[in-house]
Image 1 (cartoon, protein in one colour):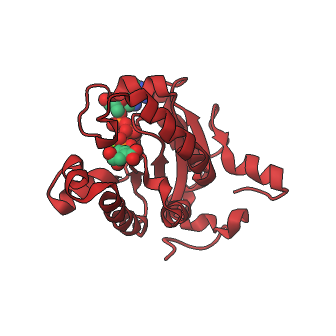
Image 2 (tube, protein in one colour):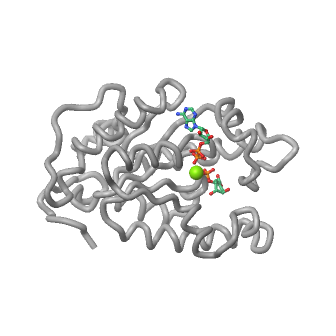
Length: 222
Ligand SMILES: Nc1ncnc2c1ncn2[C@@H]1O[C@H](COP(=O)(O)OP(=O)(O)O)[C@@H](O)[C@H]1O
Ligand SMILES: O=C(O)C1=C[C@@H](OP(=O)(O)O)[C@@H](O)[C@H](O)C1
Ligand SMILES: [Mg+2]
């Protein structure tokens, strides 16, 4: 269900821009989705939801326990159900888990419900940021670098497919990443929320995936 007035129409993939009132962060483990999401939400005064934390609070157990008892398949099933519920909300900042893009139905819902931002991060940085955390079952392996590389090979095209905007987190500090996404959201989507006005101008440094794709396919982007 659209959150607001269907005044603006975006031709890209037939998805009305007016449905996008959320900000959705995608990207690999250690990209900073949870961290950037929390700061972004504070800056924009929007509620912040992390789909992994939501899943943990619904089940009452942590992610490694879900993997232990139900395997990755069980985790993905639960994750998809959580994402479906969260995508029905309006005006939130949503940090997804790194594998949220694996299911086509997730990709479609994420795309529809918000401005999707891919936090692109090199594997070396992912490794550094996740080294001390035991809460990611997929990295509890002999060779986490090889695992991250293999995952990125499969997932990078999916992150790109779903994203409206790609931000390189290795080139930007946390604060400037947050500022850049906030500005882009204000420009593109904030006017969709009642009582808000879209901003002016484009955030410097932002790479608008939608517009690049639209230019290639001869469409006009959002
Ligand atoms: N832009 C950043 N610069 C420096 N450290 C970061 C940045 N983003 C995240 N981190 C750190 O990296 C770790 C993993 O970040 P997290 O937000 O949990 O990533 P994700 O949710 O994408 O897996 C955290 O300790 C966080 O403080
Ligand atoms: O990449 C993945 O498949 C996963 C990423 C994790 O979230 P973060 O990306 O926030 O670390 C979490 O959802 C789970 O451990 C699986
Ligand atoms: Mg996270």
